[in-house]
Amino acid sequence: SVNGCIAQMFLFILLPGAEAFILSAMAYDRYAAICDPLHYVQTMRKGICVQLVSGAWTMGFFNALLNTVFALKLHFCGPNQISHFSCELPPLLQLSCTDTLTNQVVLLISALVFGLSSFLLTLISYIHIIYTILRIRTAEGRRKAFSTCSSHLIVVGLLYVTGFLQYTKPSSVSSVVLDEMFSIQYSILTPLLNPIVYSLKNKEVKTNLRNILWKFRFLN
Image 1 (cartoon, rainbow, N blue to C red):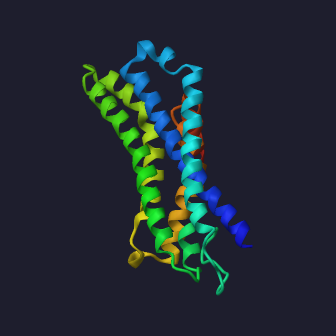
Image 2: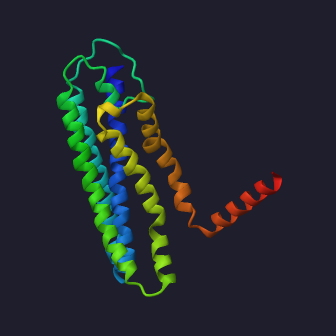
């Protein structure tokens, strides 16, 4: 149904939006751990963590609500099949019988404002982190400091690159296959890879992974 489709669209905007700001909060956590380690416990106390997570969900909610309110004003009187895996906003706009210019402008502005704000927060944290790492005198110290951020940087790259390409690319380069690939990347593969990426720093996981790869090579 139309209402069910819009409800699904709301969730698909809410969840990646909240994840982007949670990644910004995690970048701040890395900043506190590397740039001001002596005050880390005080800086990242439980109350601050709750505020950061609540703020991330609030920003994601307002982003989803803004686009959903304008989507509720659309009328559909023709085809009712979306060429996509889910009811995301761009393919939904293609089925509307009414003018969608306002929706497209709102989508672009919200993607830029909310996306860029979370990205800038992450970027500013990492500018300070990189500056601090470069000031570490020993190579081993720099390696350990950088390894603290490596997993987070991989996840940030996976989410932001595909998300920005999906919602800011011009319609002239849009295609069903390309849209579906981007959608799978940032909505399914990135969350699926999160526990794998973050657990690669664990020594036991590394050891077991090496054993599995060695057994696989031996069997081949």
